[in-house]
Image: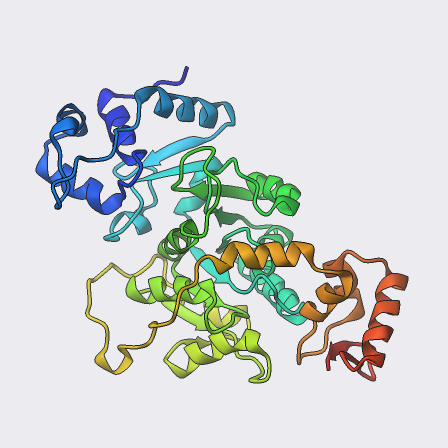
Length: 379
């Protein structure tokens, strides 16, 4: 069995793996006590603000099994204060205390730029995002994303084809392959970077964990690029974290008629930097994120991120994508910007005759239009 290096490390992990105990409560406890071993010893005496007992402390055996599974998979655990813990995360007020890492943890210390966007992205949005990640990676910058369907997938693929590294921050445990169709991509990421999570081994991704994942994506990165995203997309949560951390936020402009451009267009109206290609990111990219400074939100932008956050929609949207018919998948990929037929073949997974036949049917129904150069757009 894999043992932690000290009794103090084991005690910290027991606290962090206790249900209902997050980074904020953990820090308060560590400020009150000299060490985690003493916290565990006093655990039965601890009470919440309402006088209720603390949740049952995670058992040592449970933590040791997690460490064993991670070790057997070739992974490591990084704790805040460790030499290899990402320095750009360490100074943030809500940084995760512990990270599970599969792959090469050294990649976490490299300059990263997050690229995020819709799961139901257009063909042109996927192609553009993949090219951006390719170009950034070819200049030694690490594209970071969340291994979700759509834009995230395109970003990781582009980084790998660009001959660079990539980081995937996941909402569940690092062992959880979600979505399942990204299993091969996950293996490629492990060979060209790493998969990271603050959740324990075996944790299934639930709706409430995705915003926490988004804050890690923002915290690891020098800045965040928002590609296609609806006004209420989780990508805007990532942008909000980036803004609050003093990171750069770039947004890709799009057609006002496409709901998937509503998020980036709104960000641009509220001060985000317009991006048209990798040169816009690379031009003035610092060596590391600016030091974190706690700041009050600008009164003029007090409502900048006051948007409803229906986190439960995250998994529902993924399920809907998985159950979509071929025609629905094609329609979802089409937008106001024409998409090349070859791109649609690759992104739908359909053979050319099948795709061609479905596009003709959609054209007759008024749902698709063929341009003179053979590209296709919606409507």
